[in-house]
Every structure is written in C-alpha cells, then in structure tokens.
Image 1: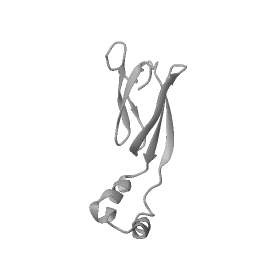
Image 2: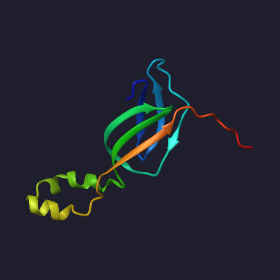
Image 3: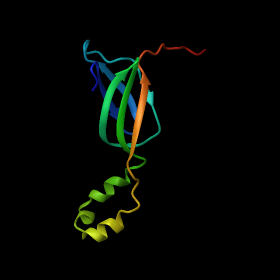
Image 4: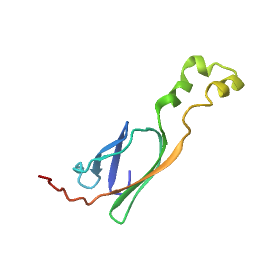
Length: 106
C-alpha cells in the first residue's frame, strides 16, 4: 500500500489490480513479469509518477518443501543438509509507471 494505492500481487507474478485509495476504483493498468514466488512485501511508495515496490522473492516454489512436516521434524543438521538446494531469497524492486496511455495496434 502506498499513500494513494493498494497493490495486489498474484503469483506467478501478475500485478493486475491497483486500487486508487481516494476513489476506491481499480485502475486499468496491468503488469506482467516472469514467474516467481513472493514471500514478503518489503515496501511500497510512489515516486515521480511511478509505483515502486520491493519484495522478497524466490525463483520457484521449492521453498515450501521445507515446511512439510517430515522436513520440519528433522534434526537441525539434517534439515539444513536436506534443504540446502532451495532457491535463495532475493530482494526485487519493481518501478511501474502509473500514467500509461493505452495504444491500439492494428
């Protein structure tokens, strides 16, 4: 959420709902990016006509394999060894323009 917008992120990444807080109406803006798994939202703000937001993301969903009960009951050393190959978290920033003019291509 920024000062003026609520942001909804779908996974795989598809930002298709940006709601103006003042009007309560969704914008017609839709953004798409490569697939990823969002685990945490870090920050969101507006800057010079852009929506800027930061997330902690993973390239795939194997992160969730760690949370299966058979993995969670392992001793610490075994747990670390069994899960050393999960995709590491990365901080990703998206800077998305808010004032887009639709262009029709014939």
